[in-house]
Length: 302
Length: 269
Image (cartoon, rainbow over all chains, first blue to last red; front, top):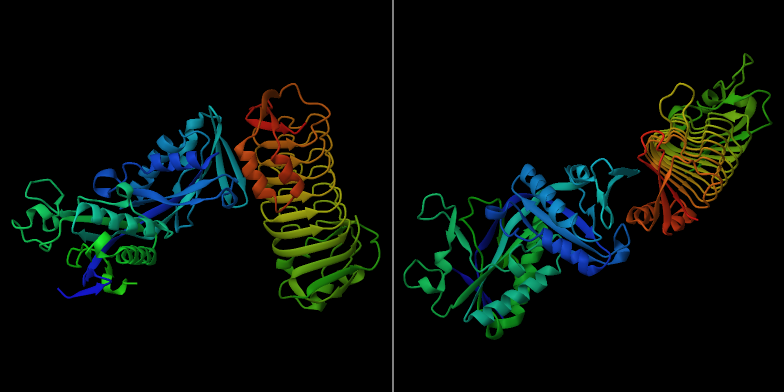
């Protein structure tokens, strides 16, 4: 495989392969930034991978009180799923259990999409007849009486079919500490890019998977080619000095946003250098036949 | 873009129906065709040229200058564009309007915005009775759009309001929001007696309270509701006074318990 070396960090001439997804965005506000963050974090918990969680979700960015419809601090949350019906199901369940329940919260649409997903329109029944519908021009809200006042929720939010899931970077280093430092630097850089989330814990996944398994009925299993402890036993993708591999998975509302996020991530890893960070960056793909979106690392080197 | 200007020559001898003079009906017409449009409401025929001096311009911007209270149905059924009126207008201005903007720089007669469905009406002066209300036999009044009255409004403002927002910066007469089905009525000043009479759903805000509250409204306490704060932001571009009113703590009354009782009146005092 041809490689490119920038500031001592090897960048493989390969590509990340990603898939089209359905996505939506929400703005959650609360009386304080702490409680807006809390509602957002609760709602996006257990949403790391569509394989086991039904959707992938995360915090996009925080908004100051001046930039939200109700003049309170807010957090924008993105949700990704493989179908419109699954996205609707996850959105409804998560907002009902995690945002409606959070003290002082309110919930607004944060994307204009080609289709609408039910938000307040689905949750209003919690009001048991005391819910109030309010419209102003094109906007429609539901007011649901709750024990600390009212839960205000926009009736619908948008759905985009242009979303991309599965953009990724594999960060390889000589020790667990330096590899983690490089991955953390990449996460911090990608967090600044709008319209993308990194759904795994703290943005990082250590158990990258391959499709299929030797066991019947297991859809995905450990990515043995990147497991350092199996280096001698399998057809490895690692070098002799590789001790740790961490992956960053990126979902974005558009393909451009995913590319921008990967560029920012590569930039941060390169900037940290091989001594304090990673020695090599590569990406995961399935030979290019499964996903329509290909992100070649050589095009994304800053 | 230069507006199409109609200047009143003198006060007409009869009430006139100006409903043909909306942008969608004027589009594509020549000056001669416009001047021949009939406006009479009696057997005595009156054409535009008899009453107005016409200065041609873009038909989506109509200006009526020197208007008086005998000019009825201005902007009726308007579906886009803009009409600006200098002077008073008669009954049913902006009735059944679906889109566009109607700016009235004087006073308006009864049934302003009657049955309106969309668009924006701004009135600088006083509105007559039945603001947004239905005509006899109609099931619902205004059902969309925004009306802003800078002055006061007469009795039964927002009668049978179904959807949309009415903002009255001044006071209102008796029975504001009577028989409301839903929608929002915000009054900056004081309301007359029995606001929300037989209202089913919807929201009435009375900045200066009212002279007599119906006993069929029940006190739900003073609150600072997020929904009011959100609404303050939405209506701020239309009325700064109404926006600041909604940011204050408001006392909520639920009613009218004589009917469905899902409505609410907020008072600022």
